[in-house]
Amino acid sequence: MTISADASKPAPWPFVPSPRAVDVTHAEGCTLYTKDGDAILDAAGGAIVSNIGHGRREVAEATAEAMTKMTYAVPPFVTPERTRLVERLTRAWLPPHLTRIYLASGGSESVDAAARLAVQHFRAAGDTKRWKVIGRDISYHGTTMFTLDIAGHEARKRGFEQLMHDMPHAPTPYALRSPLGRHHPDFDVAAAQALEDIIVREGPETVAAFVAEPITGSSGGALMPGPRYWPMVQEICRKYGVLLIIDEVMVGFGRTGKRFASEHFDIKADIMISGKGLAGGYAPIVGVYATEEVTAPLADKGQALMFYTYGAHPGACAAADKVLQIMEEEDLVARSAEKGKALAERLEALLGQHPHVAEIRGEGLFRGLEIVKDRETLECFPEEAAVAGRVVAAGLKQGVFFYGGGTGTVRDIVCVGPAFIVSDAELDRIAETLKVAIDKAVESASK
Image 1 (cartoon, one colour):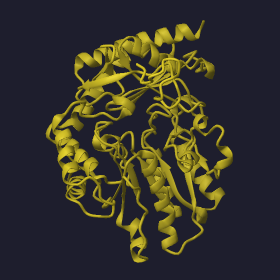
Image 2 (image 1 turned 135 degrees about the horizontal axis):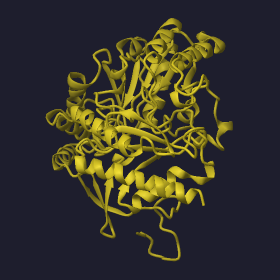
Image 3 (image 1 turned 90 degrees about the vertical axis):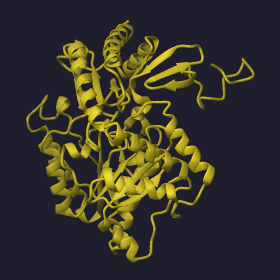
Image 4 (image 1 turned 45 degrees about the vertical axis):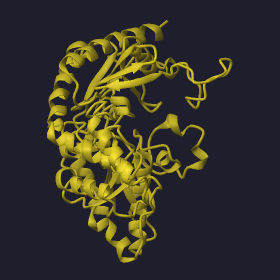
């Protein structure tokens, strides 16, 4: 497991030494294989990334061909790989109104770029007062200082508060723990109305954008927004001239059983970010997608949205193009919906009445579970008990990897998000192992 020549010193990787480091040598389909010869069923798709599974030789071949022809070109240049990917995205994937495509190499970069684009849009149009970007109180948008600022992830902000501008945060619709009461019928309306109240309080003339995930990712564990939230939010943004930025980094490209999670709620974003599933883990690439109206003021002023060095890398574009081709040919978005329903049925059968599982939620092959000390009162385990981490560790001992989530304030979230090629037998094992892992985690945390 160590890659250090000196056994008396910690290995140089991971960056911060960890006793939980797993030495993975190769992978195939939904399975990781370790240096010790163990097999681990990847029930999380890594960090909810893998969609077509590991080991697809055609993706490697497409990437190799692109990088043999051209190692690198600055992002504004046109290359065959970029052209093919943009054409495929426009033809088969993106909502028709999102016609401008910007490619970066990670979610943090892309959300940062989207927020800069929103502010730059107004400045190019002559409006220099709009600079605030409103986020939500349960969210994760990246680890740059600005994306930490606009997100609601208290655990990852700790110690950096003095470096932030303290951007406003609206409440996330959270049916289980709504301020109005558990599963109150108006939880979604209240959360949307609170956004409008914040815009009015801050001064609409100072607000450039509102950024949120259509279905909250691992920070909340697949929190579902309710039927009225997004229609109201879109109307509020239009009313005050605020750009709507939708973060689909985790939930886009088929993860929830539709091309994008926005489609579940008929969301028409001004700017959308999505990318983990764009290349399915085969290459680092994430896109920012915008309307003509958003980029028009920049074009009129001869401005550009500053690129990142490795954005739109030719090899990454080739990998993404091939992954999307496979997704289309094998109808994997529909498979995500089908297998997602099967996964939900298994989780509900085994854990729906578990005394320490407060809720199972999500869509498609993105499911979240919230673990609590007391199901009736929703009392949480102490933060220091690190129950979600215990579940992940217990799952690994059983040969299955789950993904922990939460924000510190929201905690003990476990996410499930296997590749779309997952089999029924693997779904059975995922659900059965998760029950065992939760039981073991609760038992050890209660000692």
